[in-house]
Amino acid sequence: MSSNTNKVGTVLDGKALAAATEHRIAARVAQIKDAADGRTPVLATVLVGDDPASATYVRMKGNACRRVGMESRAISLPASTTTQELLEQLDALNADPDVHGILLQHPVPAQVDERAAFDTIALHKDVDGVTCHGFGRMAMGQPAYGAATPAGIMRLLHHHRIELAGKHAVVIGRSPILGRPMAMMLLGADATVTICHSRTRGLADLVRQADVVVGAVGRPEFIRAEWIANGAVVVDAGYHPPGVGDVELGPLVGRVAAYTPVPGGVGPMTINTLILQTLESAENALGLAG
Image (tube, rainbow, N blue to C red; front, side):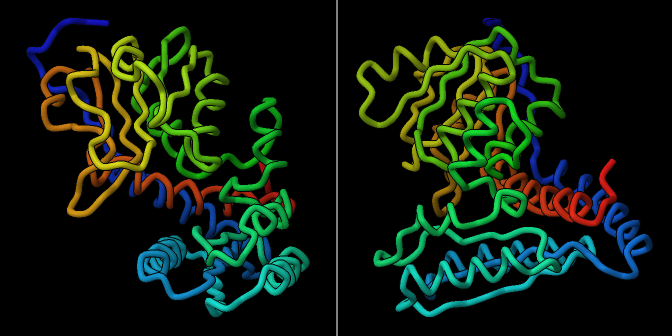
């Protein structure tokens, strides 16, 4: 890793890449409508309960769909919904040929078996990459829709030509929809991967060894700037009001090779990847892929 601290690192601007990708998605959606008698990709979003943050995320995803000409079908269920009731709703969406992607907004109320609900989503409609089946296929290098946030990160790194092969990547976080799939995607790109978490002993020393650091621990500025080596690539997948991530980014701007801003880095890529994978699912369902 370079010790050069004389220039500002590359900003991995997810907002700009997502906006550029939306133009290409919109063109492909228009082609689908022309070829399929006006049919359009449909993303079904399922929200259980009335959590304000979750409702905001669902609205943002619906807005993204509308910007590119796709349809978003929003389904709201009461906070008292049982696991069985949710599974029945998901089964109905699986069986609906007009629905190409299914998003179950996380988290669900405590009485609902979230893992059972995620794993009810059909593999070919799992555009958020949350099922065990999809994770297993992705980890084994088989076709599957990757978890949206780590898949978005990989797209962002690829766009900026960040070399991963042979590099040491340290992922701090082990959630099933972020840290774990992130590690598998980096491994698939020929990086050497260390998975850490909030209870890892000697965490600072491990982070100092990293060429690529991914903050996905879910705690504001838990990863300190002093832990990160000069010339590293820093991906901050966290967001905490009033606008900080999981990494103490401020002191790093002048000495890292590249970094994701918070906000405007990883977040826009998550939603963009979700709608891109819904588009791909629709193209496959309608026989228009490739």
